[in-house]
Length: 219
Image (tube, rainbow, N blue to C red; front, side, top):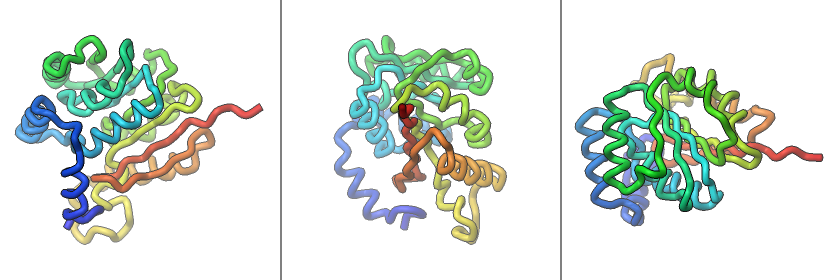
């Protein structure tokens, strides 16, 4: 049984996902071979839906890896839309650029290499949607900057917020994750829930996805 959603339910949801193709499947297999924690296809489909539903034209991603989630995001963009995605590893960034090109999205995706915490200080907003999937210990330190980069009504989407359920004290008898990472995510979740500029809901899909909307100013 899955640690959050039962396997049978996850298999059912996966069977309905029509957004995958051979390019995404090959990238997913490559990511597994490299031991990279890529998002699942069901989270990818959610990202594409959120981009399309909000009419987002400027999207920022923290944690490119080899471009898997970025392809889902970029595919939801309208013509002329842009994905700016940040990756610390030059090697992974190079693979991601190749994968965006294979997917026919090289004109929509710009990969920035370097420390996201430093790069975020130089990026100009506003963005319509931001996907946070980088270093878990940087979730909280970069939160306020990401909120500042969002336009009113923009979405901040964060992966891994349930962390195999380990953010719940006592849920797992044998935790698999680093305790400091778990603590960082739990603190981030608390801050999201209390943030004065955000309204947040957590979706228990795969490893947990939070969706936060930046409140519009009221007169």
